[in-house]
Image (cartoon, rainbow, N blue to C red; front, side, top):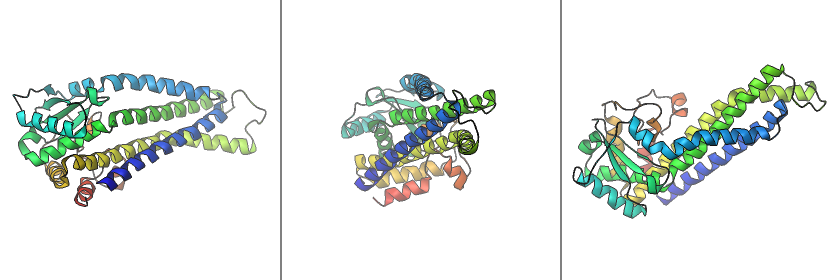
Length: 298
């Protein structure tokens, strides 16, 4: 368990550092092609942060509203509250608020910008189809997302992806409107090595949002592996979560409230997609088989 946790933390950190290096490379080409200097990066960061701030501070309310989740009381689902309270104590975080989606498909997610404002939401299907040990594994996974501040990390990654998208768009628009001439010229024109750099910069501008999306999704997948390992650490029983994942993955009930905007939050992607290397590259979750295999090695 310790090995899995440590490895996934380092991989997540490495992806974020690589993302930052990618942004600085794009910024250099942006400055060279447009002549806007570092001001373009500052403006892109400010705009992206402003766009992400609203989602960051109201993400739980928005997601719960989209999912048609309702708050539940301890009297309605005492065993759910007991599991959540016990694992919150084990994780050393405040007890999250509990919500339920009236849907037969088994699934669950956590939301909230920090442990003090967190919620855990489960479907009625997961309460009906999983036994207590499996439910503990699922709740421990979601509790780990809260403890590991995954919403905050994902917000940071979203901001970085937004910066890449804005810089790329501005670079392409600048070249289009200037007819390929650099702004604030430095006497080197667009011949020789300068022309090559501009072509490389434009190619990077076109491909950058694509690469940013791949990195963003890779971070999401690593955090799922980390939540699995951290959840197993909380329960001290990896087979419980492995069995739950196996049941959820095999269930054929469609989650009616699922959509692309919220799919990445769930413990298992509720949108049944095609398999294959390309689809896996653009998936928010690792394959269930790999997650179960990792848990069985603990």
